Image (cartoon, rainbow, N blue to C red; front, side, top):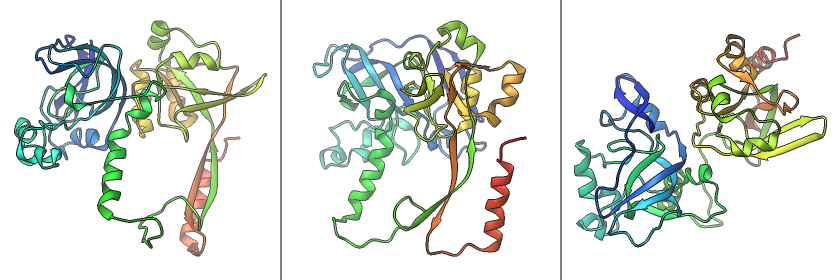
Length: 329
């Protein structure tokens, strides 16, 4: 199977690995169906690294999958179940787990070899950047069939947010202070530019998976999500008018550069700003798809408080950005 392996010094290498086999009674073998790229994954790849990780592991700790096989001691899951993975599965036996603090599980922390760091799946043991992975059954949660795999992969960062909100102890009607820009009342969104988008893929991907002939065909392809405002719904216009298609795939990231590199490597279909992939299209590293259907452009906007007067300098910066991104004549 193909897997993205951490080799240290900023290197994440796509290589061939044997498909894992059930080794313990508590093991579950998953077919990975959705995986996200966390900021921690990028920190691991910094030079020097901003987060420790074990050399030689398959990265990826935000992921979902379909049960392929279960160990002899597993009765809670069966092949075909759709599941979400908890990358910090507490043992359930130590004093921390028994007192409701599985994130401090002494067994999990001891397994990492790094003081204070739990043995996170995808950081200190093999994770989701592969077609298959072994995980303990007690780190799995069943998903309903209607929940898309790629969206469920975001449950781990969502859990972090909900945990933080829970620690605040706020209730409806409480007065709170919000730090930093956010969407909502009292803000102005100034459109700076419309960014033309291009649908493309590497020649190797097209040769392997075939060329989509209509937007609906994208539902059967691995689509690289994250570079457009709504990564789950791609919109096109053509001779038959506007059409939207829900897409999915096993790779999601908010980094357009990372997704472009993944597309060049043959990982899937990419919907990206035309400026980002222009040279790759000219060089033949990527090729256009569905040329009879034009992707609707993405809108780049500046968001700021409605009651704040913008300085002359900031107005000049926004004008310069809008000018630089204006359509080329």
